[in-house]
Image 1 (cartoon, helix red, strand yellow):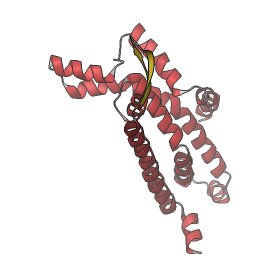
Image 2 (cartoon, helix red, strand yellow):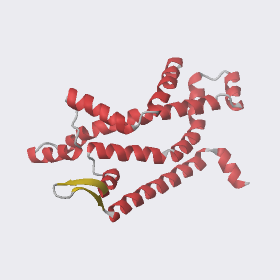
Image 3 (tube, one colour):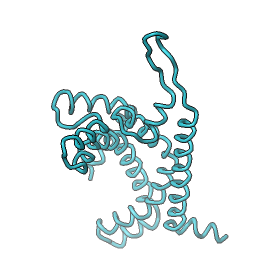
Length: 210
């Protein structure tokens, strides 16, 4: 556990300062241009699978590999670091010190620590959801995944034309719809996570009764 703690403590500040779009370009260069392992264009990969008669499920999985690797690499270290801090804070609480004094096995104590730290993790996820969503939007644009981020990027972009040169394309309804979906996702996520927090944390339930 000490080695894992050192790795998380060392890598979390490094990856938290690297934006997801930079990691996406780095992995694109490594896994697509250099190694030719994963496809880079999600929609084109699906079209090629349909034209060639290949299984579309495999095309979906192959096309999502690089985006998922990018997001996991970008976000997991910050989450691991915060979980580590939550567990370290809870390990100094009186009820955990009492369990240690009773001689409970480390596995049971760790299980209890994870359970008591989970509400704090939910709160962190709620406050950090917009940052996660921004990372997803950037990755969608880079890998051509037709989601909310792609729609937002296509609704406001610079278009090159032969006669006029450069023109700004603006589609207000597309931008409005993408923003509405983002707000709706944030609202649903906040309600669900806060409901789980109240259900899992007995301290919050006691405060509500008071």
